[in-house]
Image (tube, rainbow, N blue to C red; front, side, top):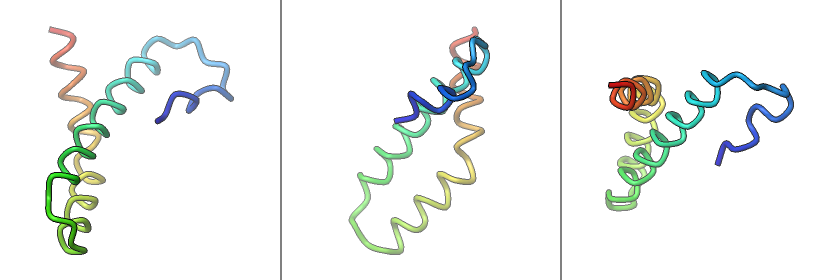
Length: 68
């Protein structure tokens, strides 16, 4: 999904790569959560709002869990 996000920067930074992987994992979790709800506008809107608000925290938690 985000594989080429840093392609134009020519980055070699391991920290950026690790963050990218954590955000990809968080997006997959958000996507699975959103698709598990009945497909109504209210649910989708709530799921997207929650995902936007918490995606960084979820990525942080994923990185913290991996680092232990």
